[in-house]
Structures are given as structure tokens and as C-alpha cells.
Image (tube, rainbow, N blue to C red):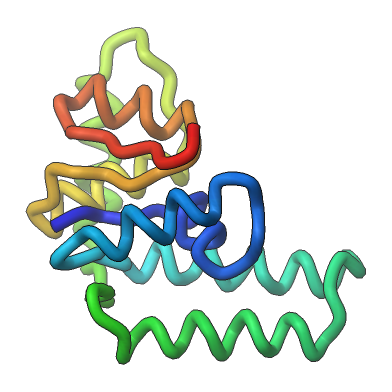
Length: 143
């Protein structure tokens, strides 16, 4: 079982150099947990591509359809997050010492704790470092 963040989920949707490695990693997992935070962040990135002119409306809608299809696709498991994830993020931040962690990264790490996850699938080096500092196992395909 592994928690996926948006940096990896996006690579599963569109083509980037790391995309084949991400897809292979996903295929090798029994369960890939997609939190509402990951889903939101992915939706925001998709819309940003369309609004910024990087993709057409049709392509944007195609990406969204693919993302929604993951809800019915093994090994993905979508999970909601409670509001308490913010309190966990604050606790992690306060007890984090001198290590800096971006807000969304901190929320992903709190989401992992809330959902009982100990492995992270990410292609974000800063997110990976912050996760390792908390003792989580990190998988960074294609990096």
C-alpha cells in the first residue's frame, strides 16, 4: 500500500519523462491511496494547464475523465480527509525542528499520518526529503 501525491498522479495522466516509471510503480502496487488533497491538487494543475493555454479544452476534459476513471481502476483507492488533518500538519510543523516543509507538502504528510500510510509515491524531491525526515519510506520512480 502506498500514498500517491499529485506530482506522481499527474505523471500517470500525461506524458513526462518519468511517466512510464510512475505507471509501472503504480501497476506493481496492491493499493495506491489517493487522498482528497491529492485529487484537489491534481484538479487544480489540470485546470491550470487549460487556463494557461498549455492544453485545449478537449484535452483538459480528457485528463479529467482519465482521473475520474481511476476511481474505478485497480489499484487506486480514493479516501476522504477529515478536517483534523490540519491540526496534524501544525503538530508536525511545530515539532519539525529546523527543517522547512512547504504547506501542501506538510498537508500531504499529515494526510499520510491520518490515513495510516507509511510509504509515499512522489516525484517531488522536497516532498520526498520531508517524508524521509518523518521516517516514511519514499518511492521516486524515474528520478
